[in-house]
Image (cartoon, rainbow over all chains, first blue to last red; front, side, top):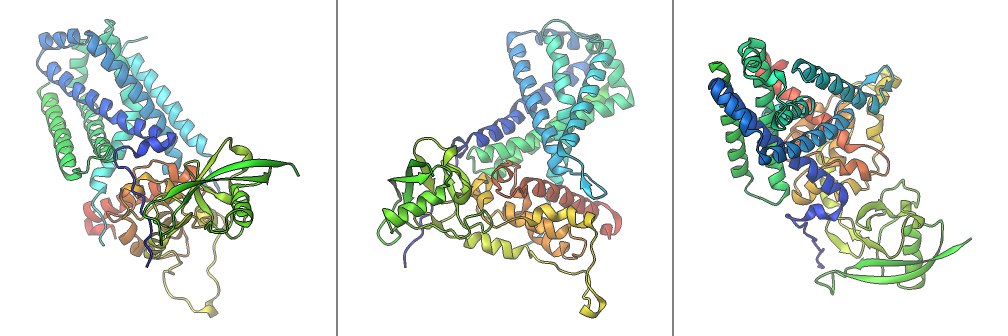
Length: 129
Length: 113
Length: 247
């Protein structure tokens, strides 16, 4: 009996086989930066709870070059996550009205619009404008 | 074969992914402004204290941090597997416990405010 | 008809004599508007009759000529030569055992397809004398896209999670289960959920989305799988958190 050939998938380097896998891995790696940013938020809550002097000290540590670099990475990761997530909504939650499905771009577009409105509202409430 | 209990992990992951998409970019932008030396008035001690002092504020802050932490932990677990780390049980335990600790700490800090 | 010289690098494997596969280079002249399958047929007819591959309809309907073409899972009858420059690399579908040259063993997929019960399971038996099961156009449209699958297995060749975790039931089978679950005439969802909401089912999917990008008939398996995840999560909440198991 002849033997079929099994071609193993390289478990640590498979994503180099196609650009779409690299895009996927980029999306997944955003979780590292977003997760780190969430830990940073936990520390922010710690200093807020510890009183004004601790919170002021926290705001000062924010201004280090390392913190600025971290913020740039976190911002890129958060934006990439948001874009991939909103693009996916039309796949995960299609809407059928009567006979026809609502065009997918309309569903994703509505999410982008709500996102923009919400973000501007938060910036406004935080006194940025 | 039985149905999996994965929804316990996946449902908060999906909720967290949505929360991250809607809230985290603008929150990063706010602290980024502070990092650049332009602290928005909303991030001053008094405003943050007043916001986190209200019931609604506590709930919002807790919801955003807890769900985002959980979602990131779960995605990081999958990422480790995709990078070829086959100790999935260990990775899962470490990441979920870390996220859990962060969530509890957030609740404790918020209750102190 | 204008002809063009095509260079192909084809993976060869003879199970009787080889322990590993190797690439063999061929050069044939083909009509410019031809497809990769035409080039393979020309090679087999004029250069090398020992070359093995599967094909049948030559019109993207039968789903039997799936191969990796320059690393992309494609129906070779649907891979137009004009879209390629230089040497075209042709390999058997990824993630499946290679039987000979470009012929892969589809057994794993067929077995998984059976497990998800891809057929109508009526809610209650109904004698023919009571007439047909009626369905509105809206009810048909709800699942129609997922009926288009031709079982070509390109999605399995594209799915890295299937490659890394071969137990994963995979895109096409879960999409087909979803197609029957969405059908207003069907009552078999509970039985299918036992398979597709299991550990080896939809939860192995990390939404890479490659399945939908390579599907030649636009079934959009990634969409089906995300919908199955949401529905299975709602099931779980009903079963575990609501009084009476949500029944």
